Image (cartoon, rainbow, N blue to C red):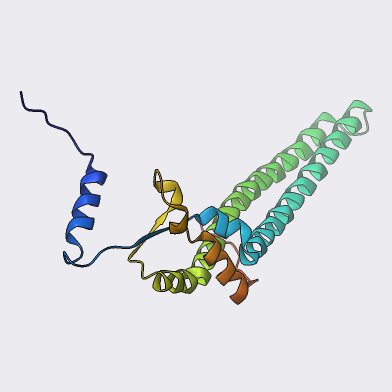
Length: 190
């Protein structure tokens, strides 16, 4: 009985790509890198992470302050009602105003969440743009034709990992970068 084996589509594509992409006499040189290490261990990556963290802290403190103010005003309003300083009608009117401000605060929370997502994406893009030349340099130095993320492969020889080289090259060239972290302008619907 004949035995057949099945290849997954990615495995088949890899065989086809590696088998037919280069002439038979040329050999593909594959190197690997650990992107997360490059991001966390380069001075540039650390600087960008600091900028994003500062933005997150700013948004968080603004929202915390707004929430504390509303809670304080609500407690004061309830105290005034309980001590018969204001009528139930005035209480309901002021409570409606506090509810509106709470809804605005909730919109602000959602806007801040979206702004942080935008800022993180912008920071990641700025980082990628800043290190692209260094990656290309390392690939040329190794005569590499393919660079693969280390997490995407099962095993690789230690000398195939160029992460340390990329980190050193990035650190020697750029240590900080002002990242545009402004959120997108609100739409008219907001």
